[in-house]
Image (tube, rainbow, N blue to C red; front, top):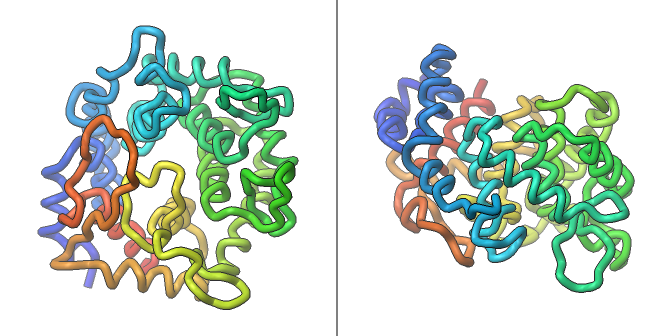
Length: 313
């Protein structure tokens, strides 16, 4: 049975949601005309969650008077959420926020850090987050090349990244940092054309790293690395989750691989009456609650449906 037929009532329910849900449903599930998709997407700036977040911006261009803290209302995390909503990448308020992040975070080693201590080295997870934000908003600045070079230099032998490498002696990549960087490289590739060959080589190594772990398992024991990774959380902030990883792989239309199977099974088992819930909140200060916990979630349902559409294609 076609996905549109099986989940038609669910799709109708998605289209009753926020503009950020509607436009992605039209694009990813319904394959609607471009004009309809663009029309819905343009409403993010004037309605719902997107407008509420834009209205929270400080006169200086920051959010909550912070660059990386407080979590999750600072400039970094508000722009990250606006990016996930799919707001217009050329939005002027967001571009101003990008300038603030870059001007105040670039370190001598080429990465990003917002620590108030005397630390002079970058933090790779933060670098990945901010690089993805700058790239999504098409922020044209030569300093992005410097950040890209930092990420190239800090890719580990196993193919991933870790904020504890190399200064703190990490020998195994972090799932969290690795997905942040992968998402950032995707945005960079979408917005700018340079370094494509190098990026593809990096991505290939990183995809293999995640697949060797079946997205959430120890490559040595086969045990689940952390049950938190298997939860349906949204927004994920900097945390790695299986559904976020699968959503990335469907976005790039990765070829089928049997090592995805267990992760796909995790998602399908969470369905209830054609919908998926928000299972676990990521604690911290927030501007507002997107969706109630343990209730059907439009965000997770949208993500699950487009993952299944990719997998069953």
